[in-house]
Amino acid sequence: MAQRCENGAHDEHDVYAVLCPCRDVLDVLAGKWSALVIGALESGPQRFGVVQKRLEGVSPKVLTRTLRRLEEYGFVTCTVFPAVPARVEYELTDLGRGAAGPLAQLREWVEGHVDLMRR
Image 1 (cartoon, helix red, strand yellow):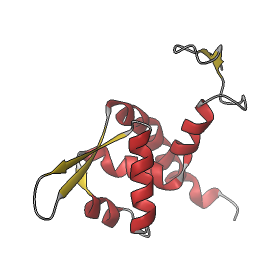
Image 2 (tube, rainbow, N blue to C red):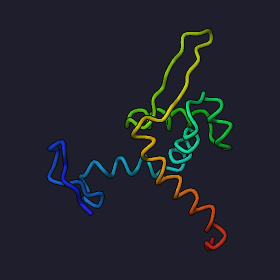
Image 3 (tube, one colour):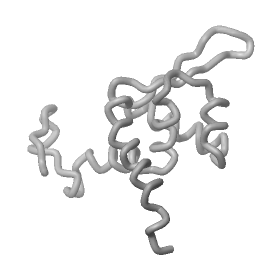
């Protein structure tokens, strides 16, 4: 269902419309690693290594790219603490916490139904 565009960029938001910026946001959130990073950060601020351990199989390069993209879209903040070596923590923003609920429901649905799917 389309919603009126509040910033005036176009008439209405419609994820099915080819030029709607909603598609870019959906692309970010629908990615496997983005959905898992957001889930991993639901419990609070975490360091890179902790997130990487939680997400078995993600390479440092892919995790770095995913965190940067989530930060670029406003879902995650990165805080650098002055130390040697530098300590960095990632945390969900209000926007990220808002996306976390629906993504958690999707993850739970997948876990509950994966055995019913044909592969």
